[in-house]
Image (cartoon, rainbow, N blue to C red):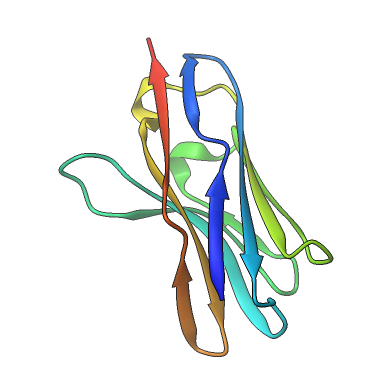
Length: 114
C-alpha cells in the first residue's frame, strides 16, 4: 500500500485547506485512517482519525475546526481544515492501519500566516 498526500499550502489565518490522501494497493480490511502533524522540533501528533465503523476522534486543539472524512470507493480520505491558526503550521502526514500494519504518506506542508 502506498499513500499519496496532497492539498497542503500557504494560507492566511482564518482560511481553509483540504488535504487528501489517496491509497494505492487497496484499503480492504483497514482499521483506521488518519492524519498526523509534526512541527519543527516537535513530535508527530495525532490530528484526526476515522475508524472502519465511521467513528471519528480529534485532537482537542482542532475540534470544531477540522473534519475528517473518507471515500471508501476512491480509497481516499480527507481532512477539511477551517479557521486555520498559525499554530496549525506543520507537515501533515496521512496514516493507514490495515491488518496490523501501519502505512504513512510522504507528508504535505501546511503553513498558516498570521
